[in-house]
Amino acid sequence: MALIRFLAGSAGRATRVVIGAVLMGLGAWLGGAGWVLFAIGAVMAAAGAADVCFLAPLAHLPLRPGTERS
Image 1 (cartoon, rainbow, N blue to C red):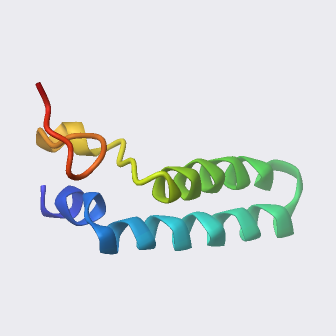
Image 2 (image 1 turned 135 degrees about the horizontal axis):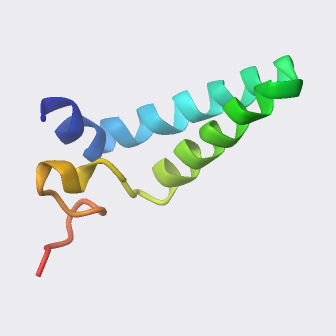
């Protein structure tokens, strides 16, 4: 739960963007089946850039920090 709370915060957002960019670079460098890594990295980077944490609902947190669940 602590990891999900970290990822839902602003530091976690930056971490997701950086890790996503690294996975995208690694996937492009590997080529072939490495494009799967590229796709995973692209989703992570886009989610971080959009300030969305897909794991947050597992900790009963909103997808976007600062929004309340109704």
